[in-house]
Image (cartoon, helix red, strand yellow):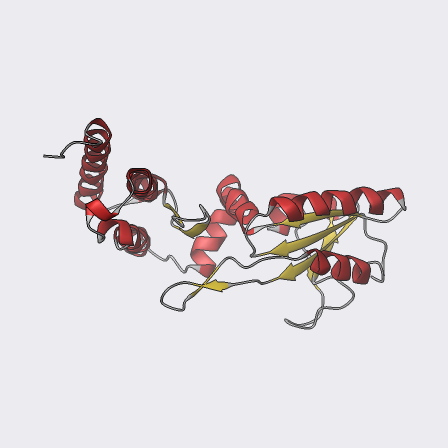
Length: 243
């Protein structure tokens, strides 16, 4: 992500994994030879109902205080310091980071930013080279069949959620409609969100539009149409009966 956002072809890892030193895990320069930028990585994973790790958790103000103070001891003077985390975007932490940023700059030290998991998703969509690397190297997509499988697994997870198993009369109308909307989004964009928090919990490039198998693509398009019809009928018949 450093390469794509800051244009440095060779950002440097500082030490080994788990061996962070003086508030910096990765450092590099703007466009390869400009101002020095340091990143501290902070994993704050949560676990889903199957105990599988997923992005989440919570960054505390104390994390920012401690790590930014450590970064002041870095061997070279940083222009920008970033706390990059798997935690969900948090307005309170964003505000606190902005306040720290102002104080730090005013004192002649570096600027301060926080990269949340949502920011990684945004940049993954924005930078084609980063997206291509991620799916080839991390997700290990080697063929169109691999890609189709990943997209179908995501859509399968969307349909396995409680909204499609709970009896309709036990669902509140707004929650059921939101579930339908989220499932359509998963089909059409490849983005699956947590129902309660709105946090992106899984992503597959482009959704049904990237499916190579035409028969599967056609079925997904038809499924999307049926979900839209269900949304429309449910909305029209609130308080009545869905035929």
